Length: 227
Image (cartoon, one colour):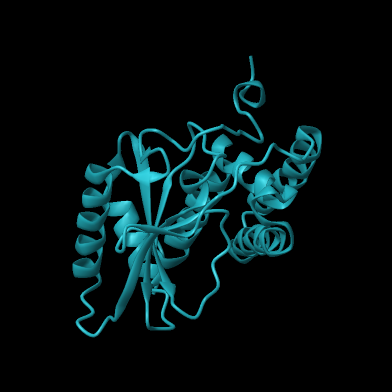
């Protein structure tokens, strides 16, 4: 049995993930731990003037399309335009954080930035900002797999090139395509579902690690290099 047969390209459930939710209300112990993680991330950023507006949970763990490959998207909503991308990557690579076995991924989100998700929960205020609505899947799994094959081809082509700029562009293109799908058709867009399928297969992480490898090589000097 191959990986495609093991991974549902469009998972759906009739209830929110019971590890996180009690009905449609966040479990108290989960909320307290997420706030603890958020506080630790704020301290890690070392930004005394960081104006925290909210801490939110979104993505598949705040909806009905979660799977064994889902993570918890925890957003620090701040009154700033800075994304702290390098710090976010460093933090997520430094700490292996999980809630009931579900990995936690930290983000910094400017309050002015629109966030697309079927469900958005304010962990800080303990209430829904956008409550998800259960809907049966509308996208044909064949369409998701077809789009995923196209994206996979872009990844493989970029990695075969062994060119850092091309690999970075492939990653950015995948993110742009996913963002466009989310803006047009929400989480049930074929672009978003194809991206998530590739992520579940490990192909997104594979490309990310390959980019880091090429960056390290570019910044290194071999033992036998001449001045």
